[in-house]
Length: 341
Ligand code: PLP
Ligand code: COI
Image 1: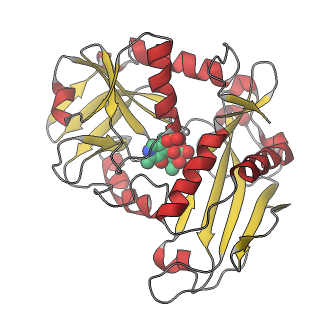
Image 2: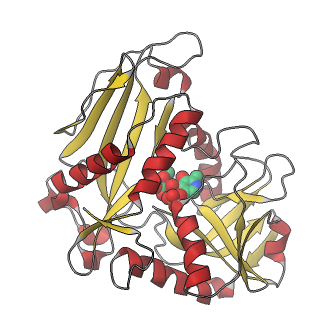
Image 3: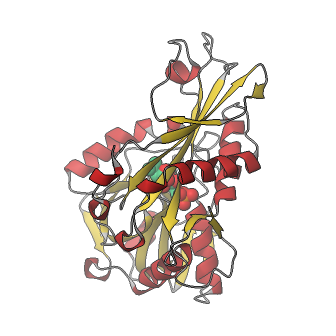
């Protein structure tokens, strides 16, 4: 799409075609030298591993225009590392971290006319994706893979923006089971969440809070973001035990809460019942796309808990200001998280 035709001030989280993408192919046991190509379709065998058995992984990152006009990435090496952890779980080839970072920077530079301006609050979302394009018939890893990195200009993931969202706790659907692939960013974890998301949206909720698949008691995550709550004044988030995506925003928020707000943090099992107690004063979710999205209420069947009259909580707002301030170079990046493109 012609960048001149894009309303950068009213973007949502929808696909918009940009100019170029990065492509590398894995054949005969090694990666080709990656190159930039015009954005567009490619041929794929109907027998491709990804089409038949879902052997595919992806990442999500953002390039932002900082306050001083610099183009910046947030902790991109963490994405490179997680991409490789996902690849290993799905028996796919890994990709060199330095090449990944260079490729991401190249994609951003080539598509820089699509980066929403600083004052729009938008970002250029970067989507690295790797798929098995080699044909297979038996359930086994393919011999050939394709890595593509493309970009899309985006605004907020939830149309509510920084306004609080209403979530439904599901004791019907689960997202990931112990021993499964919940910690990996594989396509297979997302397709099954579309039906629960559609059903909950029809009831007026923005998303589902998934509980652990064994006991249907402890919070896992929010389907597209990690979960946090302030309980007894401490910042609590579900511990990583293989069923939750280890979010980069999650890790950053824990650090900011400890170091900048002097808060005590806990990574532990959080029963959904705790959210209905007075001792739980705020809740929010975190992610590259979701940034920090306040949770206004949680509902399980007929029982609803509203936080803060549906307004963003005090700690949520402080964390949001600190995180986005660091990301946009409005405040000092003392942790060394921001990388110039
Ligand atoms: N959980 C899921 C299922 C996600 O898809 C995402 C988004 O990437 C997150 C959590 C948040 O992770 P991050 O903060 O690294 O974007
Ligand atoms: C992200 O936050 O980058 C995600 O991947 C969430 C969703 C768009 C899948």
